[in-house]
Length: 125
Image (tube, rainbow, N blue to C red; front, side, top):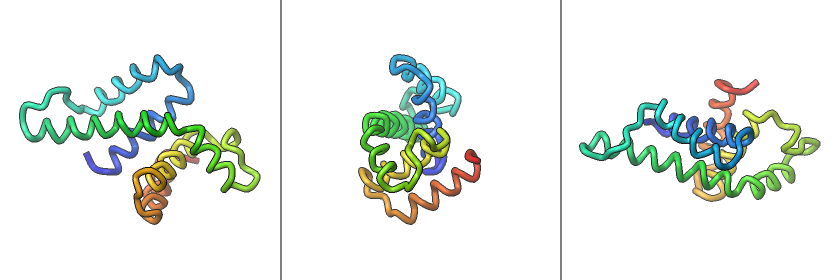
């Protein structure tokens, strides 16, 4: 998977987490990963790469959700007149993931912003 495909999968799952109970999130995670065609076993090198992508998606989704309140506070501080509750859920999920990548993964701000904008063009209003 490309970096963008991984990022889009993470955003979809973060988005879903706003509408699902915590116990149903693991089911959504499995369905999304199964739909993406990522295999479960690691028998050959191609499988290992895909399994690595799968683990990365799972870890990032859980980390973003764990830090959702902290990210929302930061978003609220930086957006004038826009509380996270007013921001459409798709766009909010994109912003959360981009902010997470900058703050906790040390991704370059320019890259995170560019990726967020490109994904927002595809999924947002």
